Structures are given as structure tokens and as C-alpha cells.
Image 1: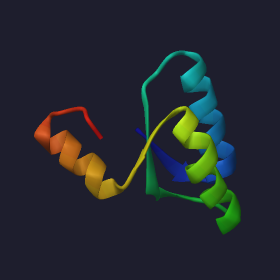
Image 2 (image 1 turned 60 degrees about the horizontal axis):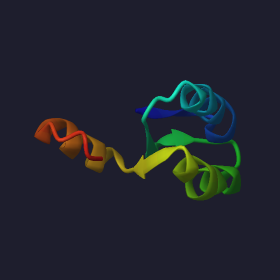
Image 3 (image 1 turned 90 degrees about the vertical axis):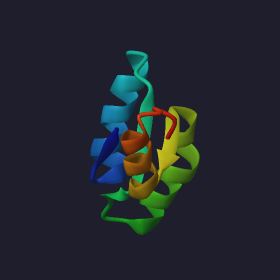
Image 4 (image 1 turned 30 degrees about the vertical axis):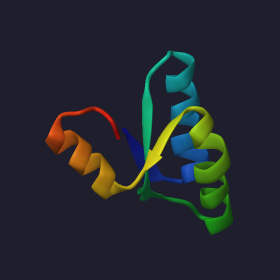
Length: 71
């Protein structure tokens, strides 16, 4: 489960490393930020969906509480 500062730098580089190691990734879109809103939006809409699932904080919390692992 990934979130953090600098969506298109820190989160993206961590995601690429995790993806290369075959981790199943969930990106928490509203728990990330970037210096550039367009770069954040681009990563969430075009890059992250190729590596995993992009979900809201609420969806991830609901998944964790339900124990489904289906965010």
C-alpha cells in the first residue's frame, strides 16, 4: 500500500522497484501529493494503473476492515 509525498518522484520510484520484485501494489490516490498537480494526476491515471490498483483511502480502509484484500 503506497502513499506519500512527491507522487511522481518518491512514490513512483518506490512503486517501480516494488513492481520489479513482483509485489502486488495498491496506490492510495488521496494519500499522495506532488509539487505539480498535473504530474500527480498523470501518475495516478496513466502510470500507477499499469503496476497495480489505484484506490481512495476509504476504499483501502474498507478492504482492510473486511479482510478481503480486494481493494
